[in-house]
Image (cartoon, rainbow, N blue to C red; front, side):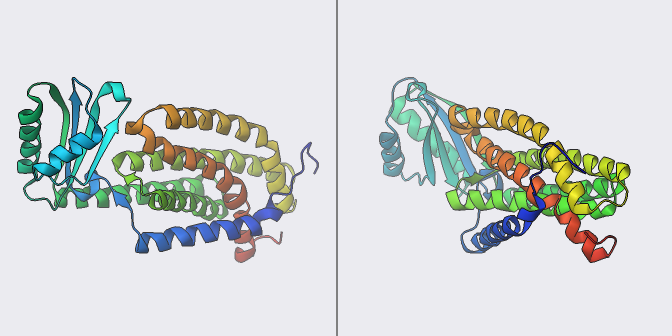
Length: 298
């Protein structure tokens, strides 16, 4: 079998597999050593978004809260300086959350009168946060399991393990990136992970379809040749779709503002990992599983 492009992707599997294994192990170790920086959704606490009419310095607001014994876990500016918007975060262990929220509003009223507006107040109890966290990880598990069943039914079961390994690889390394940067892991990041899972498996299915077509056209062909040809023949489509999605994600990451910054950080990392894992993990692993199952000697 000949094709216009003939890059031996499967030959790179050992190197790519070694790099991926190291990244996955590092991410798992970080989970037990450093852990995820859970947002209010998952750890419980209070988030208050405030908009001021006049320009307010971040340090002045922090000092005001400190002087009034309001122990903030985090204070950050939202958007441009001209917007005068701030996000105040208080952890679950800071007493009665409703009372703390009221104290924040009282402190601001005493200092600024009616020259501010509370745009949003989110209060999540510790128990509710733990339940949300468990539900989020269950959602990821069930999504991956459903994809494995779908792939096993649509294709030969030999294709499913590689796709699942690639999806788990992507999710674990994205979590590792969040632990490394200590970005908040919240419900919107879970949504980003589910989107990445869908994007990655879509790429994988396209190549699997081409693998199956080539196998039907060239019965008895070596699996290595079939996989390399399938990847090469779908490379233009992979590059076009990936660059389009990546371009949008990077633009939103840079200029979308802090509210959606972490979401598109996860999407950007996920798109890059999705392309990489589809080509260098999911599809080449089919060869490995065929050898293990003794179905065909590649």
